[in-house]
Length: 280
Ligand SMILES: [Zn+2]
Image (cartoon, rainbow, N blue to C red; front, side):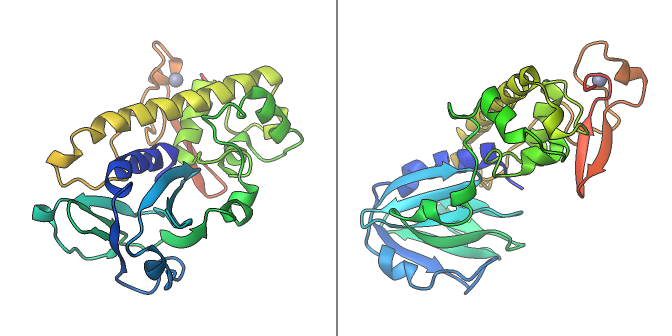
């Protein structure tokens, strides 16, 4: 599932295509994705210009000059294609199309349909779920060690699970959760409330670092998207521990290299990858 960095990259790729161009038509090719598509939204947005696009957690928000807009979630398998007129092709699972009078169009394709698009209004989107209970943006100033210590205080759940709670911090999913815990040397099985102030500081810093690095990498892969027909929404990473069961972790000389390497355990139904030597 795309996490914050992937969604941020999609948002950045959409900016030059979606903003400040009169939208000829928002087209729905079916009535529902994970939820019903907002049937009256195409009328509200036809002929309007999208003037803002932003990201909150794993969601992309865009608003037109009449304050109506949409929130898009990529779900498990959702991808965005930006297609110039000469490269337009209708593909299976193309569910939503943003068409303009000239230049590229935007297509949302989602084979498994866990993604969704809903109508939002500039005045009240923050008052509705999930935004009304969402934690701070991890790359923002309000997310730091002090905040994290407060948010985790008294929590008996594992730190691994606590970070997946979007009320604690927005946009962190399984991958960057594992990577940040490795970077900060914290055992994913510890109870969230047991972390010291210093560990919370380290962990907050690690979360910011792994996310920022991933955005930087994704951004560099984005530069040449026009030369491929690659779908936006996913990009290749090299992870330290995520999905690397049995491999030695990146720490030079770490004893895990001559032992069993990176370990995988299951916590609350999700795989956790960690190095038992670095994270203890
Ligand atoms: Zn190791």
